[in-house]
Image (cartoon, rainbow, N blue to C red; front, side, top):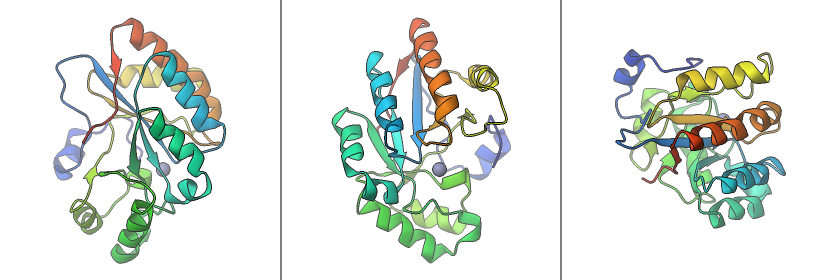
Length: 204
Ligand SMILES: [Zn+2]
């Protein structure tokens, strides 16, 4: 799925998925996928701390396995975590049972009721099984931070254009996204804090 802002038709088909959060105040929900990653994740935590911002980290089980101390740092900093499978599976290319086993393996390491499918790709049968135990959290703002074909400034401009109150914003605390992330995240935090927005973790 490569939509930047999700078309309404997709929201309707996948009605049980969460794409943004209806809010009355100016809340934004930053999310970080694919970590924990050495150096990058701790850098994100430190940036968030500067603005008392809370966020949600959709962790890969295999990375929590390798870097439990970074995972613990996310938790002890007061952020929320979510399950992003153990092995970053592609839903469309994976059998339903294999998919669920991978999610369950990750859940032995990640204590959360939140789930986000890698690549945003999940088949209805998989979504139905996952939804028995998890809330599926998608997004309405994809920064494309992992896409190094866009300039850092294009990444920032695109992100700005899509943000509205209640937006769920996707970044990646990964090596691939590091360069765009380190340019865009501090600017978004500064600009939207000045505008009176609050950055919150996803609670349910
Ligand atoms: Zn991912």
